[in-house]
Length: 524
Image 1 (spheres, helix red, strand yellow):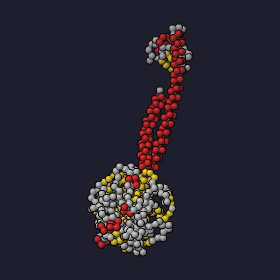
Image 2 (tube, one colour):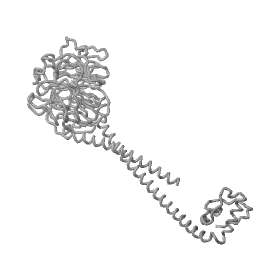
Image 3 (tube, one colour):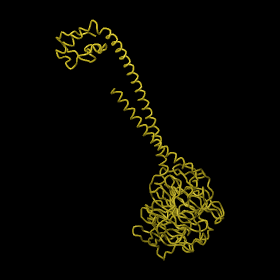
C-alpha cells in the first residue's frame, strides 16, 4: 500500500511538472510565433535609388528610414509605405554588389514621409527615433517617432519644449541617453539650393527617458550658423565636432572646425593643420577612434560631387587624405555608418537627376573599398554611426533575442520530451506494480478461500476440542491474553501462515521460542 501511494504521488508530481512545462513551452512557442510574424513582415527587397534618408545601427541590423527614391531630383517621390524602412543584417557576410536588404511592411500608424531628417538609435529602449525633415507638403511636425524592430511598429511622442519652428538638414548624435541636435534649416519653404539662407546655430538636447528638449549654449555668433554639416561625437575626449556645412548661403571653410566640450558646455573654434579637403555640404563623417573620417558631399551649387575621403585627427588637429582603392562614384545626401573597421556607405545622389541604389564597404585599415563585407558578431558594439550621429554603445536586440528565443524553444521542447518520457516510464512501472499486486492478491484470496472451505468442514470435527483446549490453556499461560473467546465456526485457521506463527480466531499470534505449554498446536 505504501509503495502504491508513493507511485501515485510520483505520477501526480510528474503530471504537475508536465503541465507546467507545457505552459512554458506554449509561452516560448508564442514568442517564436511573434518573431516569425515579425520576420514575415520583413521581406527581401531590391531597393530603388535613394537619397536624403537616415541610417542607424540597432541590434544586428542597419536601418534605413525615409528619403527620396527613383530619379528626378526634387521632383522624385518620397519613400513611403513598404519602402519607408529597409533593414540589412550586419552579422552575416555579404557581397556589396548584392546586399540582402529587407523591406519592413508598413504599419497602420507611421510617420509622414520625410527627407533630410534626423534619426538616432535609442539602444536603452531598443528603438530608433526619427524627427524633423522635409515633408511632402514642405511642412514639419514636432512629433518624435519611435520605431521598434521587435514589433515592427511606430509610436508617436509629443516632446516637451523643443527648438523653435520646424527644421531639416540639422545633424544629431547620441551621448548616453541624450540626443544632441545642432543647427539645420527652419524655413519650410527652403529646400536644397535655398536651404542655406535660414540656417541655425542653436544646440538642443533631448532626454530619451522623458522626451524633453533642453536648450544648451548656442554657438557664438562669430562662427555663424550651420546647415547640411556633420556633428560627430568623440567618446575618448567627450566632445562634439562640427565639420563643413553652409552658413547662410556660404560654405564653411574646412581649415577649422567647431568643438563643443560636453563637460564644460563651451564652444570653441579649432584651427586644423595639413591640407584641408574642399569646402562642402551634405557629406558624411564617422568617428574611428580619435579620427573622424569625412566622405563625399558637394559644393554649394550641387554641381561638383566629391568622391574623396579626408581624415581629421583630433589628437593633433590635422588633416590627411588617404589614397583610396576602388572608390565608387562621388555622391552626396548619402549615409555612412562605421561597423568595426569598415565604413558602410549607403545610396546617395550622384547629380544629373540620378540616385544610387548601391552599398559600399570601405576598409579603414587599408582604405580599400572591398567587394565583401565580412559581417560582425555584435554590430552595436562595433558601430559608430556617421552622417547624422556618432556613438560608441552596447546593447542586445533582435538577433540576440531571436537566438535566445530559438534556444529557449529548443530547450523547452527537450524538457517537454523528457517529461513525457518520465511520465510514461513511471506509468509503465505503476502498471507493472499494479499487475503484480493484483496477481499476488488473487493468489492470497484463492488460498484463503480454499483454507476457509477446508476449515469450515473440519471446525466441528476432530480439531474442535483441541482448539478450545489450546486457547484456554494459552489464555491461562498469558500467550493470547489480549484476545476474547473466539467463535469457532466463524474464525478458521489460516492455511498460509508462516511456520513460526499460527492464526487463532482470525488473528496472527507468534509462537514463543520455547514453550512448556501443554496446549495442542495444529502444525501448518
